[in-house]
Length: 116
Image 1 (tube, rainbow, N blue to C red):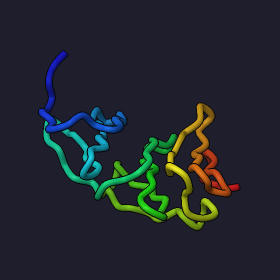
Image 2: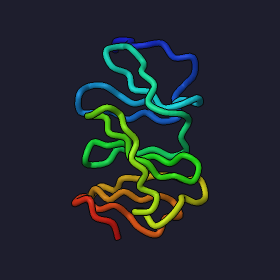
Image 3: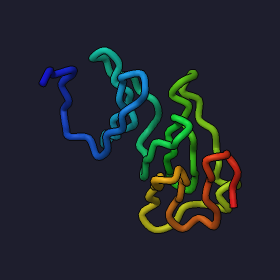
Image 4: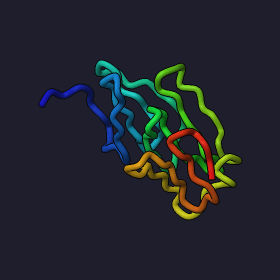
């Protein structure tokens, strides 16, 4: 196994991306590691899952966000589409059939990008 970068602390979550990079959920924020270099994506988040569309779905405070890793890393606020703010521990999960669920939200995101 080859070391790709040194971290000050263990990540809370680690997500692989199609281009060979990976996303680290560290105590102070979300980072992408490309070719051994860490690039900051955003401030600290609460929950994280990779969607079937390659985007990162995460919660931060009262928001539900999608971060586009294939583009410029822009954040899209999907809180209203999910039917409101996350609750509890604000966890995010992608099911085997590609649905995105956020703890306490009224709706889920389906693989065809619709919500119900």
